[in-house]
Image (cartoon, rainbow, N blue to C red):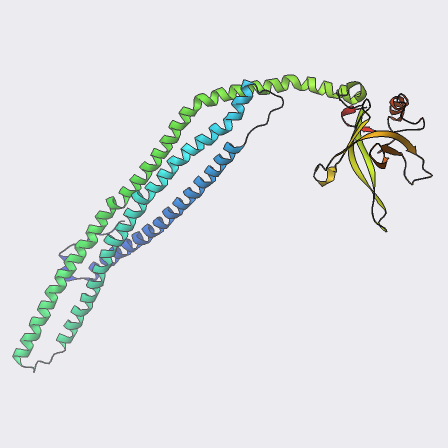
Length: 386
């Protein structure tokens, strides 16, 4: 059952049941006040969350815009160009969407938060002030009546008449204030039906506008989306079509890498370890270098490189070979070592990673008259290099 109506005629009786009905109306308004206060708080949190979401979406859009695909080869296909441009299109879509969300967030403050705060402070606040006056006048009225009843009959008639007049005047003032308070209670119960709900309608209208704008953006994006799906499918089909060929080529190279070595300007290339002497008592250390040898020019390049330190290239060194001699194990406590002498620098001691391909390397060493017959240089070739 809802609230019972407050009758103006009951103000003159001021019965216990009338007071109960007033308290019920006051409790309902207090509940409404707390609800609006909590709703305003939730609305502000909603705005903050919307702004956080918008900031995250904008950052995501910014990341999409800044990323660029790197394609293999010198030229891109039309499909690859469209796929590369797609991230910027996605970024622009999110940017436009967030502009509409920002408009919606700003409208929430104007259409929902401020009207509700105004209603709570001005209308519900006015009822609270009327209640204070009503309670104060109630206390004054009934205190005066109690005092009046305690007057002695032996008092002078003029004094008694003056007291009667004062009670009657105060009672009339109390009735007037009671009527105004009852009127205010009933007025606020009716006013909240539209002054409270109307801002909610405006809030949802703004939300519907945002969703409509998002729908329109989606419709505009639909044509591009369909074209992009075709580009993606074409790229996928090419991938599926060439994957088996790539795997077949990989297996051929795996079975016989020497027959599929890449064309190189170098006679041999790969990793060797160069001996670097350090001050006593540390002895010497072996530093890995990527070495490249061009037999026709007797040109030797070596670049320090360590995979485990992030793959940073060191400063390279180039010189011309004069002689390469195998180092026997009786002169050094390492296998696969050899010395090389350059035209313009001191000799270098190198160590081979393994003994593989020794016979193959022997063949081109013997063909070079500048190399000793006892030379045996082993290269660990990259990409199947000799």
